[in-house]
Length: 395
Image 1 (cartoon, rainbow, N blue to C red):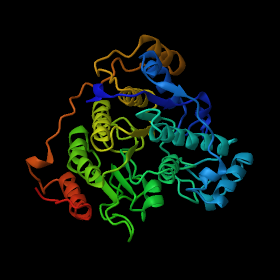
Image 2 (image 1 turned 120 degrees about the horizontal axis):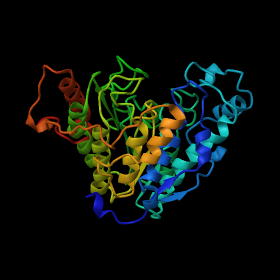
Image 3 (image 1 turned 90 degrees about the horizontal axis):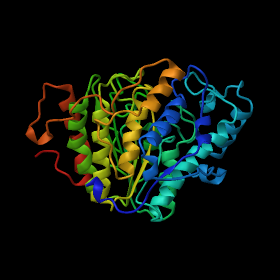
C-alpha cells in the first residue's frame, strides 16, 4: 500500500533543532538526530521529501497546551541554566537546564505544528519531525528529557483548525503520559500508547485501567508490555488492539510518536525489539493512516538512546516510509556513513539496514494464552477499552 501514496511528503528540519542538547553524558544526545539526517541523506531518502525549515512556536501557541507560568519558567531556565526550578521540573536529575532552552524547545514544537499544518492544509499527505516526540512534558512541568510537549501542541493546533477527531499512537518504550494528560478528558482525541509495564519503567503510568476522563471514557488506550517483549509479542499486542480502536474512533488525521527505545540494545529500557520489528510498526501505522483518514499522517521522533547502532537506521526507515518509498532491510548501510562513525566515535557501524530478523507474529485471533503475561495484558486492555468504543473484546 505504501507505493500507492499520492502527494508530496515533507520533513520539517533544520540543523538548529540539534541544539536541543542537555550536554555531554546525557542520554538524549543530539548526535542521534544528526546521524539520522546524514544516513537518510546518504540513502537518498531526503531526495524523496520536501525538507522545510522549522518555525519557532510563539508563546501564544505554546500556551494552548502549557501554562503561561511554565513558559516563563523555561525562558528563565535557559537564561540562568545554573539555577534549578524543581517546581517546574527544570534542572532536575533527568531534564537539565541549558542555555537557550526555550528557543530550541519552542522551535521543536513549531516544527511539529508545521508538520501538522502541512498535512491538514493539504500541502502534503505525510509529514515528519524526527526531532520532536517530546511526549512526557506536562502543562506546567518538564519531565523525562521533555521541555515542551510538541505532539500535544500539534494536536491542539489541529483541533483549533477544524479537525473533529485526532488519533495519537505512541510506540515509544515509555508511556506517552504527557500527551495523555493534556487530552485525558477530551473526547476528540484518542491517545494510544504501547509501552513497557509501568511496574518496571519510567514514568510508572499507563496501566490498562487508564481509559480517559469522565467525559471521554475510552479515549485513552494503554497497552503495558512485560519486560523482554520482542518483535513477535510487540506486534501481536499492536495488531490485537491498535487497528481496531483507531478504526472505531474514525479520526480525521493520525499523529504518531516513534521513540525507538524499545530496541534490545537500548540502554534505558527492557524490551527486545529489533529494527525490523520497528520498521514493521511504521509500515502498519502508515497503512492505518491510509485506511482510516485518507493517508493524513504526522510522524514525530521520540526516545531512543542507542544513538549510533539503532536510532539512525530506525528513523531512516521511518522517513523512507513517510516518503512512500520504503528502504529494503537488506540495503547496505552506505560506506561514507559507516566511515564517519568509525572516525568520529571509534565504532564499527552496522553493515545493513536490518538486524536480520523476520518480524512475524501470531495474530490474536489464533487464541488467547492466559499463562503468559503478554496475553493477559492484551486481554486486560481489550476488556476495559473496547466496550467504550463499541467494540467486542472477544472474538
